[in-house]
Image (cartoon, rainbow, N blue to C red):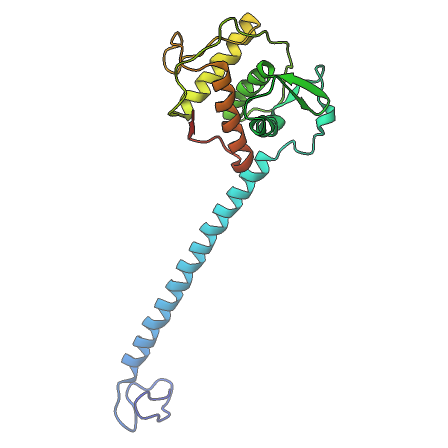
Amino acid sequence: MICPKCGHENDEDAIYCEKCGKNLKKTSGTLGNQTKLLIGLCVVLILIAGVTAGVLMKNSQNTSKANEGSDVSKDQISEGTGFPVSLAPDLASEIEKQNGTFETIKYGSVSLDKYQCIYILSKATVMLNKNESGNITIKSVGAPDSPYGFVSTGSLSKDKYVDVAYRTYNWINTNGIAPNYVGISNPGQPDLSPDTILSVLSDVLSQYKSTGKLPETVAI
C-alpha cells in the first residue's frame, strides 16, 4: 500500500506508514467513500438515461399510432368499404387547407360534401378517444334546415369537444341530416354551427395527426 503522504510503499495490511506514521486505514476509508459516491453517481446517470429513453420511445409510439393506416391507399376508400378512421386525421388536414370554403372535397376515389365530412370527423374523434379502429360508414347526409350558432370564439376542453362530436354524429344517425347547431354544455343551446363544428374537429384531428393524441383543448 502506497502512503499518500510520503509515497513509501508499505505492506498491504499495514495500518500505519512505516516511514512517516500516516494512518493508512483512514486513507483507505476515504478512498472507499469516494468510490461509493462515484458508483452512486453512475447509478443516477443510468436511471436518468433510462427514463429519457422511455419517454423518447413513448413519443415514437405515439407518432407511429398517429400514422397507423397511412399505408392504406386513398384509392381503396369507397362507399362500400367505408372511411378508415386511421385516415380521418389526414382528411382533416385536407379540410383545413380549404379554410372551410368548400362544398365538396375529393379524397382518394370519393367525393365528400361538408356534411359527410362533419359526420366522418365527429365519429372519428369519438373512436380515437376510445382507441378504436375500423371504418366509418360513408353515408348521405342532408343539409340542415336553418344552420346557425352564436359561439365563434373561445376554446373547448377535450371532454367538451368529444361530447359535441358524439352528439353530432348521433344526431345525423337518427335524423339523416346535419344539425342546425350543437350546444356545448346544454344540448338545446344554439352554440356551434355546423361550419364551426367542422372547423373545430378539423383542428382536433389535424393535431392528432401531428402528435398521435387528441389535444387537451382546442380553439373555436
